[in-house]
Image 1 (cartoon, rainbow, N blue to C red):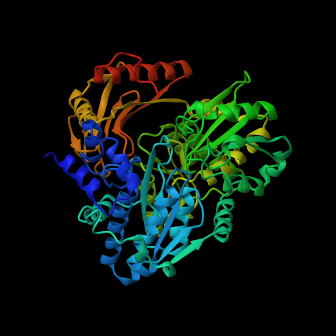
Image 2 (image 1 turned 60 degrees about the vertical axis):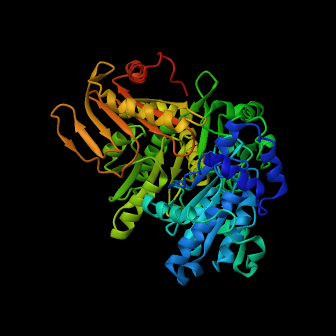
Image 3 (image 1 turned 60 degrees about the horizontal axis):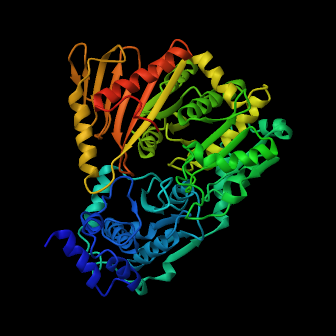
Amino acid sequence: MEDYRKRYLEWLQSDKVDEETKAELRAIENNDEEIEFRFGSYMEFGTGGLRSKMGAGCGMMNIYTVAQSTEGVARAIEAIGDEAKQKGVMIGYDSRNNSALFARRSAEVLSAHGIKVYMFDELRPTPMLSAGVRHFGCIAGINITASHNPAVYNGYKLYWDDGAQPTKQMADHVSSFIYSTDIFEGVPSKDKADESLITMVGKEFDEIFMAKVIAEQVYPDVISKAADDLEIVYTPLCGAGYRIVPEVLRRIGVKHLSTVDSQMTPNGDFPGLAKPNPEYPAAFAEGIKVAAEVKSDLIIATDPDCDRVGVMARDKSGEFQCITGNQMGSLLLDYIFCALEEQGKLPEDAYAIKTIVTSEMATKICEVHGVDLHNVLTGFKFIAEVIGEHEDRGQGTFMLGYEESYGYMKGAHSRDKDGVVASMLICEMAAYYSLKGMTLIDAIDSLYEKYGYYMENSAEIYMEGLDGKEQINALMEKLRAAQPKEIAGSRVVNIRDYQAETSKNMITGEISGTGLPKSNVIYYKAENGCVVVARPSGTEPKIKFYILANGKDEPEAKANVLACTNALEDMLGIPHGSLKK
């Protein structure tokens, strides 16, 4: 009998599995492909934790796989000692279906091991979970969320004592405990929970968190100066930002804040949102209607766990235009530096951090302002590592960390991307530019004039199904074998294979290390400064592609984006025009 069939029958026959789950399993008894999909493999517990569709099976997010994962976390903490157990674990969750249930089950498992638990009394933004780990001095944190994925997904994010997601070494360590645990017999039942060890965290921590966020204002009085003319629309996309974000904006002086009422109530079905992701213009459809009614030029959207932020602003024609993650990161970086310089407050030891797939405009901005810039792999845990290293040395003043996928972080209160602090800074920046008679779209144009024309394209190819992982690996190997001599008419000068940890100078043939951790990423750099990058997503069955281009003017930059995209499609062996977001 195939292993997946054996596991299927074990679930169906176990007295530990509830009847509702068994009914779901019986409904697929004649669907071998579905059984293999659910039981053919286990979810991989990586540095980002777990993420999968919800449903019955060892490869799905459900009460049993969540409990098994938490049992692994509990055993890893026990192995450290009693002091770690006393430090405890912070637990949070978002608006997704079953998130509160999964969070509660995690608390039961941990407390059954004598581990103290701090658990939010209702859903909270992801950065509050990270901030809570740091504030309460916890050994770890667990957040139940699938971020911006469609409604059928849920996930399990692990954080460690610095408030950041764990290193690969720590994730592998925890993973070894998880997969050595029998999913039914090795996990304590809910009646073994020690309720005396579970402390509910409520609005008193909200006040602490909001105070830390507000302390990150760059130009504290700029909102009040522009408040009468500043009209802002906000939507949490039925997620965890629904209460905290509007409250912070009101506290900093935003007078005219309109919300998208149809999306203000947390709802795991995300009605009307095929993808509750502020990277996509479709997520702003309801917000645009509200903006038209109140005559607003700015719409802010946070994703369901409120760690990402997307923005639409009016252009000169009066139409709403998406501001990309790369553009917003550059805007915030330049604004922070300029605003602090105007006040004589830009620290001499200032530094910023971006990922290798994020616009090279940041390099130019930091160069002009005399600020150190660090490049890291994708993921805020790598940004957090750089901050931690600076803190350990007692050197450097952290200005901003960000990545192109709409994540931004400022301040020491959290070690993850923060949709709350980013929303506040975006409103402050909009006020700053409005006093100059400029919209955020005008501000983007001014950046191009000041620093040069940097433009980007990102795309993805989904590969779902049983052989999805094999297809992804095969396509990555195809790119590794390509070794192009030129991209879009410009000589390739550097190829970095972060999985092999090699950086090859294509002119001299010299091979060196990448200087960054091992990761399944391919990076090509052309002589004209254009960059093409490919990497599999860590949370979804897809490969993500990034084009980072530049030019002497806007037409040349756009032409280089297209030419680089075409070159990538040639390497993949797919028709031109295939790589669209």
